[in-house]
Image 1 (cartoon, rainbow, N blue to C red):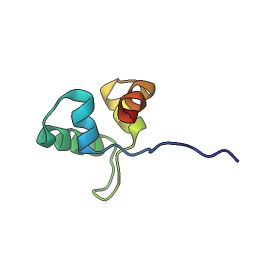
Image 2 (cartoon, rainbow, N blue to C red):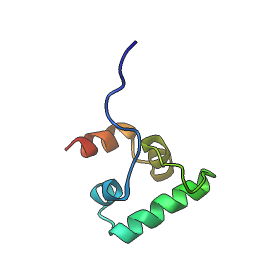
Image 3 (cartoon, rainbow, N blue to C red):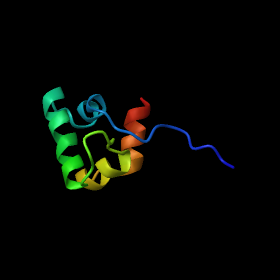
Image 4 (cartoon, helix red, strand yellow):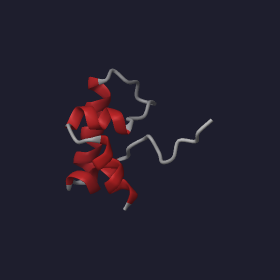
Length: 67
């Protein structure tokens, strides 16, 4: 069994680093993604959810999060 490395959840600070948006705008964007994906308030936004919504590739996101 292979181990998956890295995390799968994206946080407002990550959105800030990727987009240059403010913290508040980053939280609002994640909330919008949750709503569009019909996720409950307690559920997380995955990197895949964020990539699909924004059109940024998963590889590019993971590359910038690794820095």
